[in-house]
Image (cartoon, rainbow, N blue to C red):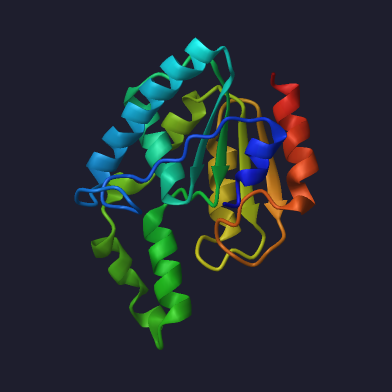
Length: 193
């Protein structure tokens, strides 16, 4: 619902729940979710080409990681104008350790457990991100209570192509493109058409 304004602005939107999430059936599984993203990329490219409309790829939180992971082995669709990443993270181990440290009593003593809880394969690689030459817009809440804004900056710093970083004001995780930054966001999208 928080992306409805994009449809009202004239963009076509396809929202997907990965297997085992939301209203999708199946078991939640990281590798399966990456396969789901690859299938959506193929479908989106074919459909957007057929309709003659530009393609923008949007991932939020774990969805951004899944998108980047899918792009490790799949070429960015040729008609893609931009990647849009909201609340993304570079290292799930760091995010998990931070959550343990800040939300549990005596969490600082247990934050090392994140290294056993989160497989290293979930993290992003600087080499992969530096090869992505497609324009990328990163949106991150300044005081995100789940994924520190430093994680968004790590992605931004590693990206190779044109990029923009927009700070969202609300103190929440994945709130969408708020009115405070919507004008700049649309200005960037328009410049890429």
